[in-house]
Length: 79
Image (cartoon, rainbow, N blue to C red; front, side, top):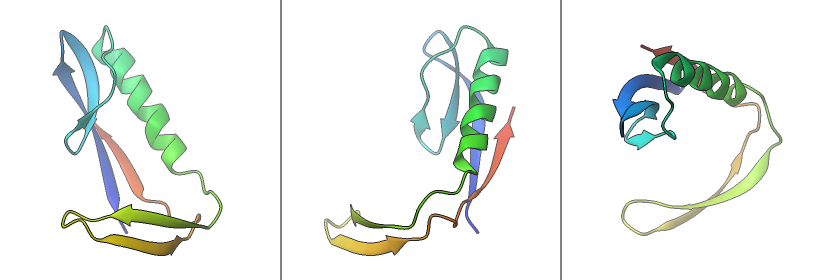
């Protein structure tokens, strides 16, 4: 199973959460960023509907597959 970690970091004069190399919007306090990360992590746990998806990989090749809406990652907020 995939694991997604939301890391609380200083960013752009405030605080944000970071997932991989992507940052959220900037929040005025560490606590506000942590609350937003908790909400995002909880929302990511909600099952959706199965649907066809298309995506391009790093070499420029396009793929099509069926994404199971019940297949949700484990999430964690790391301060």
